[in-house]
Length: 417
Image (spheres, rainbow, N blue to C red):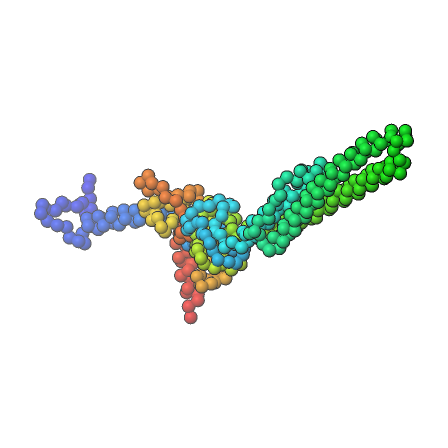
């Protein structure tokens, strides 16, 4: 049986309940309870997500692209006027390739004079050696060499003297050979006469005195031939001395030639490494001093990002951290990011300078790619391009971000006076 005091009489159609009625109160309690449970569920879910979800903590640093090897400065080993510049900015060169030439006409003339003198003395030595090998035959000397007129004065005198000595030797030997031939023919004739007179002398048909006089003539002619042979041997002996003197002169000339070649090598500036030319600072007809920097060469090596990390961000930095690099010249929205890895970190902070007003730690990021791509077109990176690198430090629970905010606020309250 229903208690009349607790029964609720339905309201007539079209009538609203009174706000303080039990129906309205019961309905409000229902919605409040639902809202409390819903809020608790949401808060609990957020709290669980805050502890379980991870967020990457990254720092953004600035820097620029640089080759893995340091940029090499090319300087001039000698002073002088630039005659030729053989390269231009942006050109790729190989190690040992000539880059520019410094005026060296005087040195080239000296080199040519030295080479000519060496060639003449060596040719003279060959002729003199043939003379020795042929036992002094003047015909073995061949044609007489002529001294050129475009040699340096000292070399001109040396060559002229040597050639004159050779000519004198040839003339003396030829003269001696002619005299020897004549004396031998005369001796042969005198010997025949003596041979013809001998039977007459023995048979008494020819006087003894006349026969002895003929023998005396033969003896004198034989003695003269011996003297000519001795003179000839003396001339041949002087040939050996001249060869030795020429050899000494050749040794000195070759030493001079080496020095001249070395000086000429200084006059041609060559690339110390392979790479790309930039910052050419000279032009033809310009003057360069010794050790003056004339251009730079970027090594033909992979580019890497050199970045600076502030003191406040360096705490969790260590080699091996992943990074994404955006090149200022190629917007990341179009060309994307280049993946990289932090490979090195400076052991000490660099002091502030005119470019950076605060101390920073230098770091290097290696790049997995050396090009960027957009629309199927690849573009090469270049040394010196500015970059922004995002270095991933660690993964943190989301809740720690909130706790950091409260910690900072609490620290601010503690320091408030």
